[in-house]
Amino acid sequence: MSTTYTSDNLVLGGGLAGLAVALELLDAGQRVLLLDRATPERLGGLARISFGGVFSVDSPEQRRSGIQDSEELALADWLAFGEIPDEDIWPRRWAEAFVGRCRADVRDWLVGRGVKFLPVVNWVERGLYQPGNSVPRFHIVWGTGYGLIVALIKAIESHPNRQKLEIKYRHRVAELTSQGGHIVGCVGIDEETGASFTATGSTTIVASGGIAGDLERVRRNWYKPWGKPPEVLLNGSHPEADGALQDAALVHGAQVTHLEKMWNYAAGVHHWKPTHAHHGLSLVPPKSALWLDAHGKRLGPPPLVTAFDTRYLVETIAQQPKQYSWQVMNQHIAEKELAVSGSEFNHAIRDKSYPRFLASVLFGNKALVKDFVDNCPDFVVANSVAELAQKMNERQGDDAVDAEVMAGEIARYDAQIARGESLFNDDQLRRIAHARRYRGDRFRTCKFARIDDPRHRPLIAVREFILTRKSLGGIQTDLGSRVLDGAGQPIPGLYAVGEAAGFGGGGMHGLRALEGTFIGGCIFSGRLAGQAIVKG
Image (cartoon, rainbow, N blue to C red; front, side, top):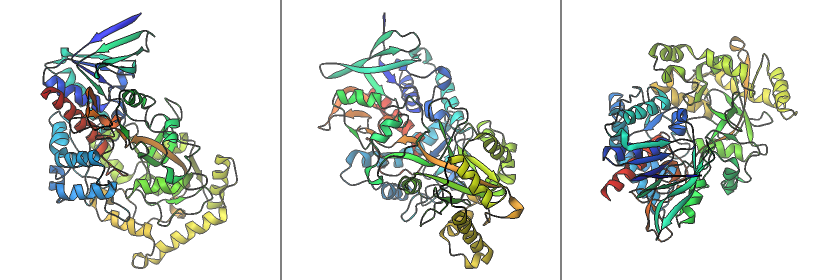
């Protein structure tokens, strides 16, 4: 038994990029069939469970905070941080277009659909030895990524052309179909019933995500200068992000580029209520914790500190023999600084509760720390350094952590703090001082906290693994999101958006991302695809 669907446009994937395309096409009065592998409650994909940070340049939030930004400065930061070579034509063109239009085409577009942002702009990816974000640009959605997706679904459901959109869930696309070199649709399986289906349309838009949900594919495309991929990887994406439709596009001559460029995180821990294999959570690592290798020795130099260069954190740990790490802190540091990237554990922001949010900023997040200490298998608690080392080894099942080595690292760091700020000679303390000068970090960062402080015990150690999140490479596209073949020519009828296209051009970020650009890249590439389709 087989079902046949027809529409003006086929959108393959119901993540943020797919929703953006659908809205753009509905605005033009076109018919859309959206095929998604997930169930209805997961419409919105990875963005739905994200923290909801949006990169914007010269925004009202920046101006109100006295932050002077410009397209010229942002583009210089982007190209330097991403190390995009001149010959990488389409990634550079996408980077230039996105930086110049992200405020109007992403931030303002979201505001027009009821999305609001926190007034204080966060400052992440500042750069280690080279410029990252010269100024804060990470705009947090009030409601997290969950609230953003809810707003867009509301915009779809209340759209005057809603009847022109049909959504089919649990539909897995297996192949693209063509006639005379023109992509005319796809075939696949309804995973609910097991029946096959055929879908046809004038345009087919691949919006199926990247490869970060397939850990074996991640390993096959691992960045070779880092050596072999880690034995333990955690999945911070979703299983449907398996690159299958990139393969399907390859069959028809599409170019898929830069798959070795990935945006992974260094502080992944196991989810104690997993929904899929190797399900991980991405911690926002405390700046005041000491980051140690598998033996208890401090990583670096320079020491690992979050919010400056995420790629450096991942690279450092990936090149360690055991390819995992520990962060050691005390209860006070954890309550003040520990956070989780995503909507699931950011209840106050997700639920739009200002009192709870302000309380967490001012008094710390005790409930979050207790939740992880009680439930996450990667958290260890003790009342002395020696006991902590013993429990770390018990948790890992070996004797890798040397208690004396770890005690010495902690003592040297604490002694730096005891000498006083005028005598600090530790790069981690310098970076903490730098972070605390910005009001967005001051209340979330401890004022030079010792680790082994009797007033703030117990001690906490967190075992952290590399966690996959997003692909920076993908299907190569022009600025209309049209898929390009080996000669640089558009493949008729075929488009790619979001992570499937490396957020635009097959990799508009280069090696590194300035953060907040994933949500923006999905919306921007989706909207450009819709506009190009309407123009014909």
